[in-house]
Image (cartoon, rainbow, N blue to C red):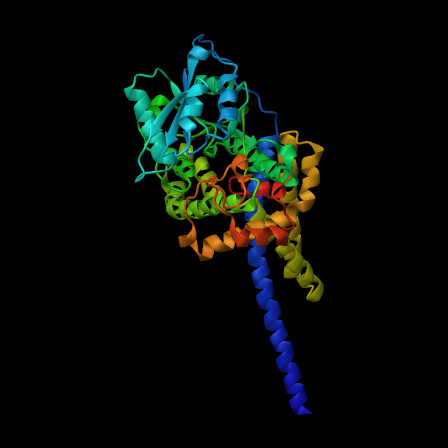
Length: 463
């Protein structure tokens, strides 16, 4: 009898230990979620507390002169749409020029650009490829050739600019911005449910968050597309060949005391891949780049928070928190899992700590939901985008898979040109030069129930 009693005591003790350990893990997870969602909640309030108003036009009658710089690698199939949108801009044609750097191209990108009336610059340097080196080369070439410009606009070759883009950026420069980022959205959102999901993600990441950050005194992020820099600023700096050269450039600017302005009425839309293989490689390099940037800059940012320039302290704190926030999909998964675990623990044990964890996790989930809804409302998203959120769990699963690979096998991530949608229509193994997605991508597509059109939403910057 005593043996049975002893086993019962040991069992109860073990259950208490398991309960205490699980409560500790849930508390830590709830604490992390509350800090991260609290940051996003603060940005949401800052962004929505008053309506954004465009700066007043400059009293100076002279408009800024822009050099539009487009890095392109084998973009003959789709660059016409981009050039057409630039030539339709509501801005004097004498005050902007279009320059495409055909970087190590093996197709007729240069010929297509020239036929459309823009200026093509052929660059052949197989030993130093990539967007950053191409931008450095093109900028140096424009300066050396005597092109007259006050600021540069950097846009991707699959992008359409709103007709008022340069007008909005001219007002930003007149308001003394040295660097600015426009609202980078998704082209053709009606094409698939996944495109609508990506639209929802970018409404938060590329609009609501930079609007809140700049209103609180922080620096807007740079997203690699729709960026504007004064000529003097560009002349002092060089782009690297890093996987996320835009984030690196923005961080170096901030540490040198230059904040990036966010210009919501400078609108642009870019194509997103409509097959999972292309989206996967793109996201892998973005997420690996984010992790590398966090490791490099967080120690410096924390040091600046403690003893840096007091006028930039808010921007340093904001940037620190921005580095710590994972992609929205990952944060949704973390917050959701914590809420489920806290609910179960509260029913099983019912102690005060368990109830507190449940309260915190529910508050975090509600804050995150409010952030997403506020992002959609801020861009006047159509009803189809709200309906697309019903399929968000599938994209969360996909994103978690990307993160696991990046964390466990970072050396496997390399730069690969993203296949454009027009190219992806070619049959596998054809002479189009399209990379075969492989059986792994087909398996994931089948597992998630995604067809080619529906996998487009898996590719925007860090969501």
